[in-house]
Amino acid sequence: MIIAVDGPAASGKGTIARALARHYGLPHMDTGLLYRAAALNLLRMGLEPESEFAAARACDIDQIDLGDPDLRSEAAGSVASRISAFPLVRQALIERQRHFAALPGGAVLDGRDIGTVIAPNAQAKLFVTATDEVRARRRWEELRAAGLDARLEDVLADIRARDQRDSARSAAPLRPAEDAERIDTSTLPVEAAIAAAIAAVERRRPSA
Image (tube, rainbow, N blue to C red; front, side, top):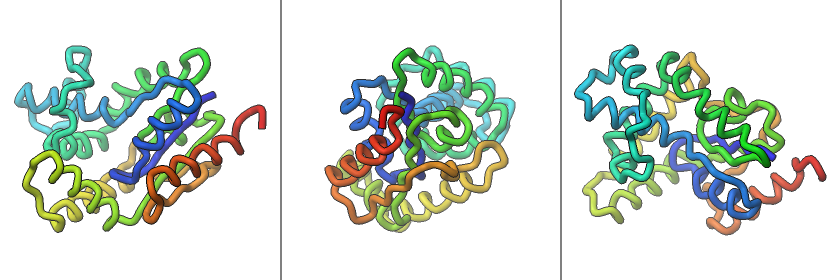
């Protein structure tokens, strides 16, 4: 069974995807880490993030440890959001994601275009969202917990800018698949959001 979990930044899709992977005993891929790895590679190589060709060069990410804490930095996230709009970057990383989705027994993948581009034939598709204000506060609290100084207003502006880039790009824009079940986590505790996701998957399981 392939489970596709899409949604904007800080919507809770990663938490839900990891919980689904544990619940169903499936491997999980946070596809956003691939773009963050390319972004981190680009930054470390001193290349220009506005150049599509430079960004494509940075997609050779085999030497990047996907457990590197620098992948979670705001710098990596900001650059990842920018370079993910480049068709050459998305093309460079698409096969790695599709190969993972094709693992025997299935997989859980979360990102921006899993249900629409990477695994359009996924048995279960979720689109997880929340208001931009709620998502900004979540990200701000994460930054504060990590000891980073951040202004809520700046985080909100960044969230909105990422949403605009992700939704307006020509290559695999952020949008729900037509057959995706939507989960709004704005007012849901984590446990309730996970329960809603499991219920949605159960409705879509081949045996259901």
